[in-house]
Length: 259
Image (cartoon, rainbow, N blue to C red; front, side):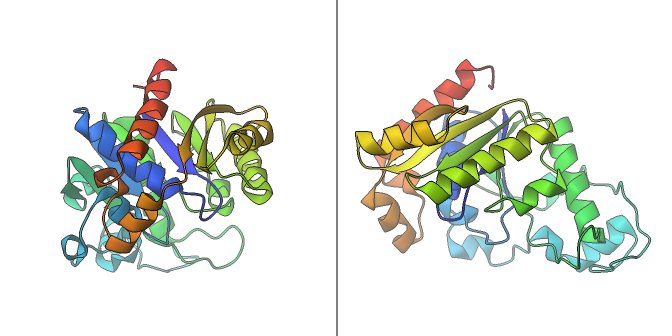
């Protein structure tokens, strides 16, 4: 199972990614969680305390690694560098592990105009390709919020996209745009998950708004998710209702051949 979780900012994609990863690790799967959002919060959703991350540097900010693997210094727009750098050792060497989940933080890549391609972009794209095509484990990618990241095409090798949406027109419109772009990339399976649901009307709005996308399940609005964020812990550890709802989503994924 190799899935990318996407959606408009604030819809709860990181919460779903973190709780899914914890649940699958609890079931005995080898799980690699990838934080591909420059606004990195997946570690907290997984239950990593701040002190466990004090020495963790996002890969895109590792200047020496970027130069060693690509032959060009970080941020060298227009420079000549390797497009297929060595990356097979990176997931095990630069990840951190807690609660059975291995976490890899990618970090932000600077932008310098349309179509630019810098050494750190080459490194991260090669790394994601290696992880999604070569490694034999569950991979959950917490994508950058919104749409821009999809134009890079680096996640075209996932088995499925899960688009998270809340009951709101902007969220649903973004979800449909993500679906179209994922299909254009060649991703065969795009599913939806509704979040922050408080009523049957919310469910109906999401189902109707995601017309053409199979909705795997719904996550209820929960004060415990807010409480977990305040305390800097994973909602997995304090919200049994959320655990059950995410388990149901995972079981439906398995039922569609993603296991």
